[in-house]
Image: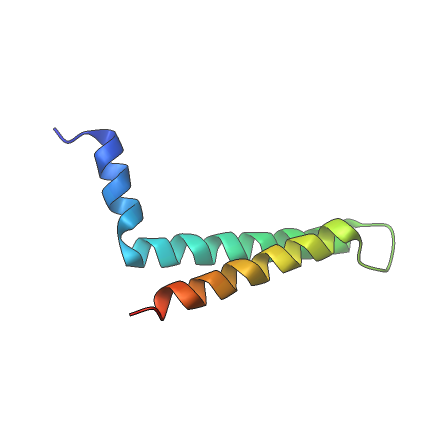
Length: 70
C-alpha cells in the first residue's frame, strides 16, 4: 500500500489538480464575499468583503501565471 503522504503529494503536484483546487479556492472566496454582501445590513461593501474579492483576484492572477509558465 502506498504512503498516504506521498499519495497526497503526488496528487497536489499534478498540474490539473492544482488548477482545479485554485479555481475552487477563488470561487469559494468570491462566493463568500457575495454571500456576505447579501446578508449584511449595510448597502455598501465592507472591508472584509473587499478583502475576499481581492484575495480571489490574487488567486486567479497566480493561477494565470502558474498555468502559462510553460
